[in-house]
Amino acid sequence: QVQLVESGGGLLQPGGSSELSCAASGNIFRIIGMAWYRQTPGKERDLVASINAGGGINYADSVKGRFTISRNNALNTVYLQMNSLKPEDTAVYYCNAHIYTSIRDFGEYWGEGTQVTVSS
Image (cartoon, rainbow, N blue to C red; front, side):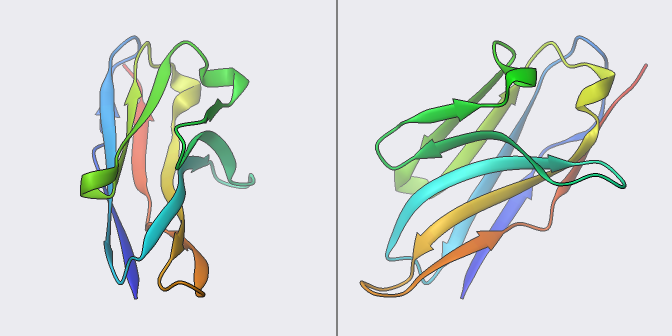
């Protein structure tokens, strides 16, 4: 079993900053990629940012230049630094990871989500 536990988020001011973190634990052989997604009511879950094992990074156009994803491989943790927050960043943010739990067993895992609300 693998668990992804997110922390951070809450009520934030427009123009403000905050950091989300997500720690993976459990039966982990190797983590391939980690990512953050977000979802608002009635809409699909969209990719915000991803980082692979080699350090390759992708961002949604809507967050480029404002959000930064990073990863601590020793701690099996991914971070999302969010700057210059806008009301449209309001969403539930989900951590995602692709993990080998053995040399052969591979799966995709999700955290439970953390609410980010940007409002004055």
